[in-house]
Length: 488
Image 1 (cartoon, rainbow, N blue to C red):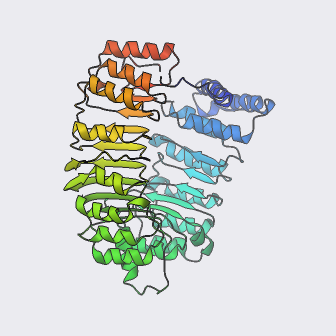
Image 2: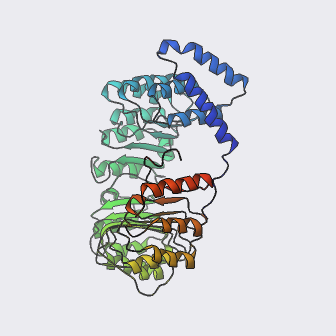
Image 3: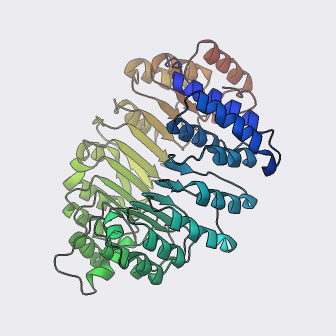
């Protein structure tokens, strides 16, 4: 039987109760000049109850992530609870009229923040002066997320006023050039040693020149990740071909590159010995085979690749691989061969398999996560993946499921699926409520089941099952959420 709903921790219940009380109080505030008395009363109450700054931080972040609330309530929550010892803040989404107010509030009350995420406050030109002032004030930041905001001047202010930043997110459509990168790094040796993750650029678009990104790679000796930039290999090749010191090596652990050729791959192998994850889109013939030279690689992500080249690679290094994320394959993908070569594989995600085959039913002994969309899977291949993966926790299949209730019954009663936590078959027209009942009965850890709109599952079935789930305190979510599913 699916597990029972756990008893919520007392801390969670208490925090939710206090949050509701605060929200109720702040909904009565209609203008900024009316906040003094409620703020005084609430602050006095919290002080008398012995509230700590940890509580203020948890309470504030709980309310700020509730985006269904009126923005004025979330804004006044920040004004009230952003005390000097609150260290982490994520503003969440706000409408444009609040941008100036939030920046001014952070300038006044956010001096001690070490982590700030402004995603959802899209600072525009008229507010950039406030943004510069804010960065000047927040000298203790180790994490700064400002996607779609940064420009060269922002980077310059970061370089002038911060020495401890470890993660910087300046991704998205931005006006960043070599000038800003140099301005941030020149004369700030502490910052260059501190920065380990820089999210920059936009997936699939070279909106920042690869030669400018190469500056970051050369100047940041401890850089491990250039998230959201799709042309890192191109930047590495530029470094390799431009007076590169013989002993220069990066510490990059993740690399994403598009249309990688053999010259680029040679540069990657020479300068990036610590890579653990590699993402290649449309690599040239022969490139995949070179991945075997990377000693620490354990995750491979590919787009627009030849299946036979991947199989040849995995014949050599499959025992190292724990994650495969694949899309747009050409040729035949053999699941049995993957099971043979990738004995430690834990996660397999596939989008658009041209042809999928299997032979002997060699088990995937460590496979926990399977997600396949447009996989052209036969029923026998799907059965193999399900029954041959004893550790399976999550299964998502986007193709039409041709199995019926009898097929599922035979598998479930024989194999039990004791580790299965979630199963999603969005298009399973032959499955009915009988399979839902059986999944609940046979899978002791199942907590998520969907997308039931693609099953022979009526609104009456949904209403009945939800009543059973509620009455038995079962920890199971049936999706999608519709008019018969509100309140769970």
